[in-house]
Figure: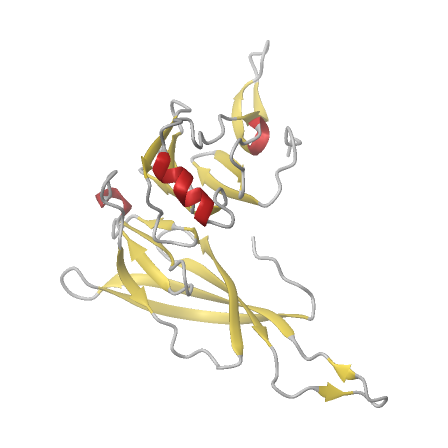
Length: 255
């Protein structure tokens, strides 16, 4: 793989067609030119041959309009107003990103132009994956990371998208603290749900010298899930095999 034009810190990424799009997860109020890059298979300059190469794309235009008072007020109230809280590919042609202080923006892949969708945020945390057979986006709720769905195409500037289905995880042990979650698409409907947990026992354990031993454990649970119709306009979630991977005391930072 060719080298990126500039390393991107805390990246998010999406694949559309044969191209890979990578953006900084916190591009800032005045994003750097190289904070948004794409790996494209195109004809190289002064050549008839095609090859893979990284290209810098137009960064999101936060606060281009000086009269955007709503955004500036939200910016003051948010601790990290330009951090990307949620993102998704829509209609195979647009990349939507949401921030807590600057609203939601859409990047048109064909034209390379950004447009603002509204002063609202997508009802997800992190990546949302499109499920074509149900025309819904599948992701996690922003507050407690429960699996959920939403129809993003039903939104407009004055009407933000809303959650349609939420499935609460009721079988989780009480000493498991959910720290993050991520979605890995598997193609043809099923997705892999990756949840990251931390356990801390209530009682400490001492070694032979009387020093406290940390029994904190970091681990991930990977589970295959699929959405099926359960009557008119209703969905049910079918869970498949799950695996637990223990990382010990090592800090795990989900992608």
